[in-house]
Image (cartoon, rainbow over all chains, first blue to last red; front, side, top):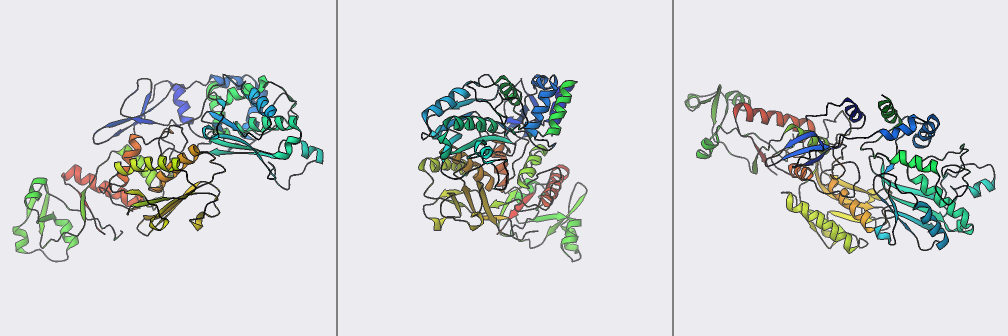
Length: 267
Length: 287
């Protein structure tokens, strides 16, 4: 294979970290680079990729050390080899009709505020056939923690967002999500406010399989253990999503690769 | 080397010469000595022919083996690089040279379990028929009776058609192949808790079915629209390169069921023969 790159050193190095994926077609697009050519009996296929990668979103992390640490913690969960997860498709949410209307309306109003986050599109659909994210009630005993997980008290267990709810996501081999289910135990509806916040927090985490930050003092964050319910999404959570979704990575990105991207941007 | 697909080389001095003397077969002197442990006679030497720097010997009483002889199908190096990755399941930089390519020798007879909706069946069959029409020597049909099938598509909660998948929670395919790397039975099981609507189920079935056609491994070289790409796309479709790779997998211009090592060796040899001697190389496939 012949790899032809632009002479610009910066973008070349980006593709050293994130190998491009090629679209093979008989038509050459002038805006794309050629990464490989396959000669067939009748046709020639040009494998092309986009070499215009904008890493300026990383400045938000580079300029704010505290935010950078927080991002690495909740995305990479203290591991160099942990991969970053993203949704690679628009999220179309269907909420079961069994949910109380007040919860559904507030949940929709809350997440409809996420507009203008590049590459993250959340919408609500009325039919399950149109969805790729299903929020449903269950009578099954479900918890997002193991049997041996210990809480300090029964009250803490009862109030934990992990009690009576769980999400599961369909993931491809590129660490991208393309489907999901969030379940809530029907018993949790006894306290509607708690149920609403539980759904809000669990859904937020499922946007990147974010690790909850139990030590966070930021009570505005959906990722915080002591989140204080609010009607609108906080600026800090929006900032997190903007950084996380500015670029859908074509290849799996672990913390090591991510740090290399940061260093590339710093140069 | 597998007996099932005995491949022999037939060196044809030139196309016109060969067509004119269909029953005569000449091979280079060196090859003759290796193949036949008998001294050359005066008669042999009278029949010598010379081409380039080779002396060619007439093979007496040449009997062509039964089977179908197909000309070698040359491909460029980039194409072969991708083909080897997907067909010989290269998962990292260090390929396993002993991995064999797998293929369906006989037709695939698809059976859908009763819980698969009519819409999903239609969508899947549209996809399958497209493959069936485009790829020679791969025949795929739908059957109505499980007894007539060799491939079952079913959902979690259905009757467990394949014991091997009984405890599988992921949505996967499972295939069986014989010692000649010929696939003869398969199944796809979809976990309907995860893949909760028709669209998700259908797309998963199509992807799994495609991979089961050669026990292909998905790679990270291609954009996600390709079925050979290891990432999801809402616009996944059979790209021109997907079709070419699949056609090549089922082409008889290469040997089937071989290891990567043998595949590479054959290519080296056939390309050399084509380039240096302008010999046309035929692959004979016999049952």
